[in-house]
Structure formats: C-alpha cells, structure tokens
Length: 209
Image (tube, rainbow, N blue to C red; front, side, top):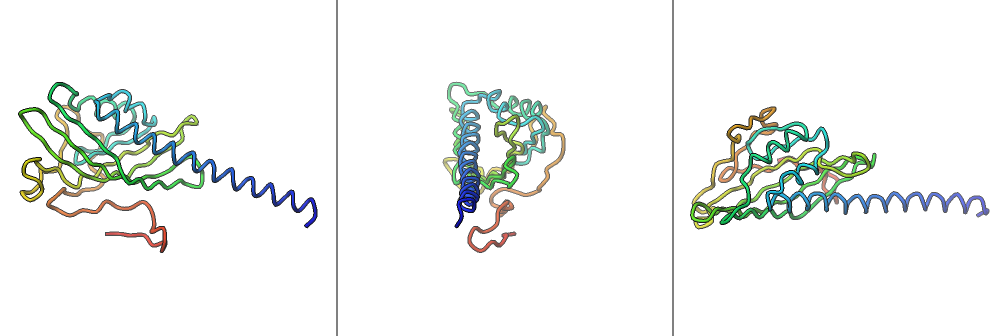
C-alpha cells in the first residue's frame, strides 16, 4: 500500500474507534442517569429526580396516565409520599439493555425494577416491573425523554403472590394526567409482557407477545 492509502486507512480506523468510544461513554452516561433517578426516588428527592428529565419529557407509570413536560413530571413526583419515620421506598433498577440510535443523540433502554415499599404499622409490599424508556442528548447532556414503567406485580409482603396481587395503581388524587394510558394492561395475576424496543441480538428477530 502507498503511504497515502495507509494514511487514509488509518484515518478511517481512527474515526471508527472514536464512534465506538463515544458509544461506550454514552452507555455509561445513560446507565448512571437511570441509576441516579432510582436513588433520588428512593429518598423522595423529587426535584433532583425531575431535573433528570428533558424539557419535553413524558412520564407514564402504572395506570396513572401520561404526563407531558418536565414541569408536569415534577408535579407528579411531588404528589408521591415523602420519606419519613417508618417509611421504606427501595427502587432497584436491574438488567439494563441500552440501544443507542445512530444519530448519537437519542437512545432507548429496558430495565427491570424491583421495589420494596411500606409504612410502619400500615402496609408492606413487594413490587416488580419493567421500564421501557427513551433518552435524548439535550444541551450536550443525556436526559430522560420518556419514562414508561409497566407494573408486573404489587403484592402484600406477608402474603406474597400466592394470594393474588394489588390492583394496578390508578390516577393520583388531585393530579390529573395530560392524557390517558398509551398502553392498557393489568398487573398480576394478569399476564402482560411490555413490548421490547430491541431485536434479538443473535437472530435479529423482533419479539411480539
């Protein structure tokens, strides 16, 4: 190969490596973003959690409807209970599958969420579900553009799923959503598999329940 050809090949290789390095950095940034959300919600730091959302973000949790815009996300979060004596709000996010879009400015992610929630002397519950979220790079920073949580189950701690589940959470009193649910479903004992945003990484096939 001529020197000119070698130089051109080297430049192409550097460009490809830069793309891979940027994708790796974006993956870590999105994982940290989602993890930060979970830690803030754990401790009911709702303003800090709302700050992680993009200006035109959407939030949809369980059966509570769709909230549009960062201000509405903040309003929704502040309508949730506060952390106080005798309360537990553990919000563990596991098994991330992150898909970066080719434009480098948007991405999607699927997570499994495990929840422990309770109030001393009143209730104690297990919960589990799936996030199918979207992310956007806004002002050079990754933010949550659509947080969509599908509840698999909520059950009483001392009874478990053997005795059935708690009905899917509906709208919060005094906080009306901007729109109705975009996906209608029921939690355990009903069966619902949230749609996958990604194709099978081996076969390339898209799974639909």
